[in-house]
Length: 505
Image (cartoon, helix red, strand yellow):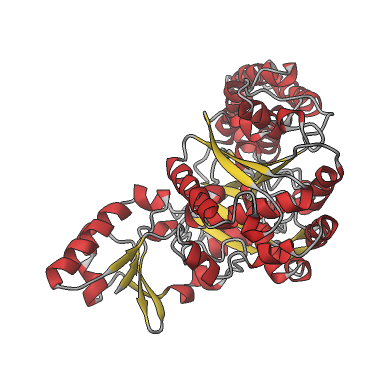
């Protein structure tokens, strides 16, 4: 028997290690030989630990499992869910970047290749640098870390820059609330990130790469570190990539966990051993990045998507999506929601479809009041905006942002004034202190929201003016985007601000 039990951090937190031990013990008691594969998560967090048994007709899922339930794996029982791929959550997805996550043994390079891995790299090795850059440009891939900047343009800039050394830096400092795609990818399919970074190196002439992971991700750090060693031993990394004349090697670096280090220039400072503060731009990192050399800084999902683009072709990837938002996006659904987890689909679903049809509404059963999209700096969208299609420009037109595609759902018991205060408090705590609008503005923002909460309605225009100043004057997105949750709370949920007006009267 081959049994798959996730070693994903979320599954482990919910008891998958204990389930794995219990399965081994139960098999021994029955005199059965079992092969346990510690795979990544399928993304259905409400069913974790999700155990899968390989059968002649595909995998059968059981979940959520506990150590006391493992007899059902051998005898059948109420936790048997049927074929994994037929479960509604899985059947509705378009899995490209996450095609192998949960399917393979994350640290088996042979398993990775058997499921299409390294096909994209082999194709890229037969192309010259301009052709590789053109393939990425033609795919329409944009930065999945939040900014949505066209990946091909960034690669082209670094490729054409003149320097004796160039770098590829992967931003794995995933710090937004309600986001976990980077972690799941690194823990469940690390070789696809390595492959994407090697292709980026071929495209730009870079021969060295770094993955910057926050220290709160010990499982991802462990898996990525082991995957790099295995890739190096297999010749995927090193002086002759897969026997070619191209060199590329990489290292895993661990950050202390400052939120601002998710901003690329702060990350580069931290990577160099300096204080993680924002750099003024220009110069752009693409021209003067790590150690002053031309550097590609891309998010985990951006780089991990590159292999499928080269395996299937730019036209195939670009065929998904809407408008200027091409390809697929891994939605991370969290908060007060019935079905939370990772759901990869093409851009274009409406917010209402995501929350109601995929997420299943709130866990409490109360009405959905708001959805914050894009992390702690994202806007709060009320149900009146649930017809908004999930796309960069579409959300921007409604004063929102997609960010890293994390969605946090709130029911009607949420106090949006308190949420507005939290946004300012978060910015005040996490600010690197480099610029005044962020460093001082966030502190004044907390004070101003507190005035409003005490009944001073005259402070509302002051809060609006403060948000405009932070939005226009901050050096980076931390101070510049904090006004999004504050102003969206004020604009879309005025009733939550009514009690202070009454108190003032």
